[in-house]
Image 1 (cartoon, rainbow, N blue to C red):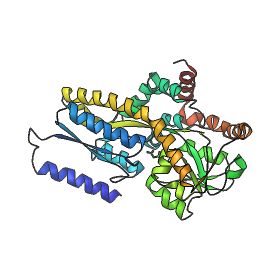
Image 2 (cartoon, helix red, strand yellow; image 1 turned 180 degrees about the horizontal axis):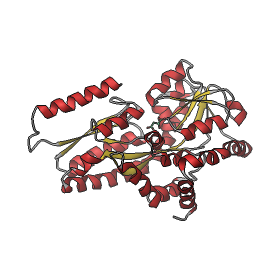
Image 3 (cartoon, rainbow, N blue to C red; image 1 turned 90 degrees about the vertical axis):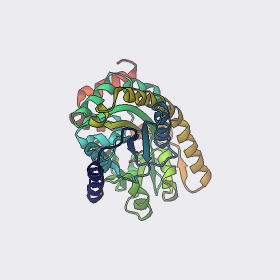
Length: 333
Ligand code: LMR
């Protein structure tokens, strides 16, 4: 992968050596992401492309690269910082390894009560202050996009915390998700999103957590026997750009792109629920995986087992961030 990064940088440098772009050449924005086009993030990216090209009258060309075509997970953030791509929408879990640990608040089990409450975080003071933490890393945050709530899949039924004992569960690279699975007695394994299907197929992992739209579009349901509709956590994204690139854009172009982003965000967040509902229905109809609904008692047992995670992670995420999150979701700001 490092090789690929080096190759991309070489191409970027070679382009510079080849001479300055002609004045009427469009500004190219490479928008790389790891999910399928037919997902909330994939559709959001495509909508942004459509609107951005329209509002700038073709002065900007957006090249969308889905499905980890260019980079896997954390490598895509490095590529953005290096300027090999200009725009990404990594899941919020992926900012911890960058040193922006406060973002891991979104990964705490059961911390997001519903989307309306979440919106008060992302549209409010906390959402803004989280984006400010990215500036020193050469990144500008533009918008928060939803995927949805996570369900838990494995090759055995997961009804109670004891069912997780010893299972190898794939996680994104987040200390909170690591603590979550340890609290359940499982063995968390960090793995890039694009490697999960094969790891499930070959038994490298026993299971994972993800949203229905990701499980459907990556075909996880074909290689997992059960999924529990636990909705125990949330996956969302921060749409980010290379700060130097963004600040260097002509102001009129940037304002048209901002407008396109506002509209693409509304579009993506409006369709995310339906995308996940449809994905769940499609997986049910496939007959390849059995879905489990938890009883209120079982949900209570999951909540109890996962309760210590927030306390354990307070020093890492920061008490202020967790308190601000809870206050905003409870209705304050
Ligand atoms: C994952 O890595 O499991 C997902 O969050 C990927 C994504 O971008 O939705």
